[in-house]
Every structure is written in structure tokens, then in C-alpha cells.
Length: 148
Image 1 (cartoon, rainbow, N blue to C red):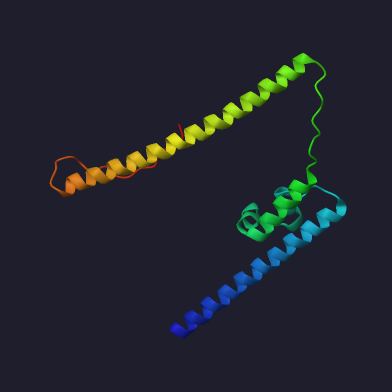
Image 2 (tube, rainbow, N blue to C red):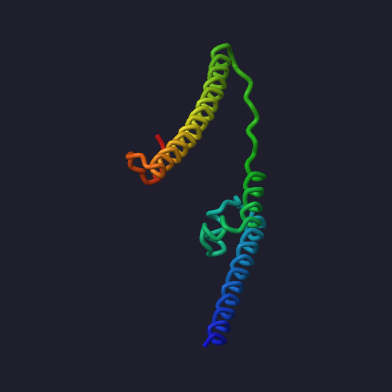
């Protein structure tokens, strides 16, 4: 029975590998076809052309990297328009300042979330140690904290 099970496992593994290889080849062919036609290279376009899932494309690092590179190459970088007058210069300056402040805010929020996560972990460790030593504080179950 063990030999039959091993043979079955090997057959299934070979079939899965062949299926994955066929999908990879289909995705590569789809990318070449899209490039020849001059169409945008996106995950959705490759998925439609190759008839594969998004998950398949995202889970294959080579395909994912290639699609991302081709997608980035296809996007033209817009040239900055010269300001027409003082008002547009002010708008540009304020927009840049808002962008920097948003980035700084995101970084600070992430740092606070990381610190809170660490503090919760330390608190849980201390409660468990107290319970181990015979304290009467209940040990809470670990839980995930969602976004604020």
C-alpha cells in the first residue's frame, strides 16, 4: 500500500509541475503577444491573455518582476509643467508640502503601531509570567489588533 501511495503522490506532483509549467509558458507567451501588439503590460492584461489567475502571476516571482518592469517602462513620466504665475507656484509648493507631511504622518503612525504591538507583546509576557508565579491575574489570549 505504501508503494501505491508513493506512486500516486509522485504522479500528482508531476501533474502539478506540468500544469504550472504550462501556465508559466502561457503567461510568457501572453506577455510577448501584448508587447508585439503594443498594449499595456498589466497583471490583468496578462491574466486575460494567458487565461491564468492573478494569484498565479503574483506567486511566481519571475513573472511578477517581469510584469512590473514592463508596466513601469510603458508608463511615460510626465514632464513637469512650468508654473504660469505666482498662484500656480504657490499651489505647487503647498502640494509638495502636503505630500511630505502625509508621508511623515504615515511613517509616524506606522512607528506608533509597531511600538504598540511590541508593548502588547511585553504586557502579555508579563501577565503570563505573573500567572506562572501564582498571581491571580487571568492570562488573556493573544489577539490581533486591527487598523485604527
